[in-house]
Length: 212
Image (cartoon, rainbow, N blue to C red):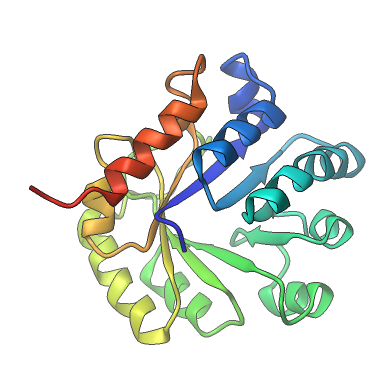
């Protein structure tokens, strides 16, 4: 798994003056290999249209495309899904999408992490690492110590750990150094809306750079 997992949130994109299609294209050009489309307020038809518009570029780039929450959209588009704690159970999503589908699961506590690691997931996400503004009612911050502990658990289960929540360009490297296989980023990838491709490249360079 690439160390940068880009989340394209429709509302965050529009607030930055970008379309989710243009933001996705910029991230893919930068070399992002895991891209999640998040559309909390789109109806199924509109969400499916958005995903199918982005899918050709993702396939051409060899990137893994996922949708947030919506198993129905994932099945129709033939992509993966990222599930929250209140979404469809992983076992049911796996039944619908099949054994090869990429399925991720959000976790926020040690108990949720342990439960997810016992499910048929492709990776687990854990956080928020830092305070975040992209959720109305965020879960308690787990911090870098929480990521270190979660990385041990995920590693023992043989699954990648994606850290999420409040991660910025200046903190991303500290999160992977704490043991996360990847960092999921929403807002800070659009900190320079005039050039999101360059911003994503800076993230990838920071995550790949060797410590001095």
